[in-house]
Picture: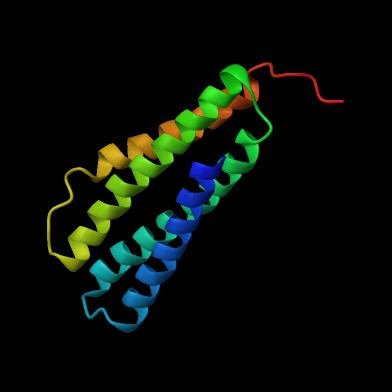
Length: 125
């Protein structure tokens, strides 16, 4: 649980910082501004998703726990690759050919959450 709370906190804080940078210190084209806003949105959303993973991990075991950890890893990697690629497109004027790989990781992380929901876990009182 602790690692996912740390990842959620770092992701949330860095998304706020990147959002502030975009709002107050970035001069670019409308198209690039859209890319940047998209990056900040997905960045923040997956920080919240990691906080949810942390809460679910705390009450899970077995296969469900493994799937939740898998979702967390995919959210961290996917956010880093997808959002990082979008930030690089705007800030460093770099091509983001790797962005779709990050998107696939994010989608797979969400599917791991679905799988965790479908796995039979210990009975609740």
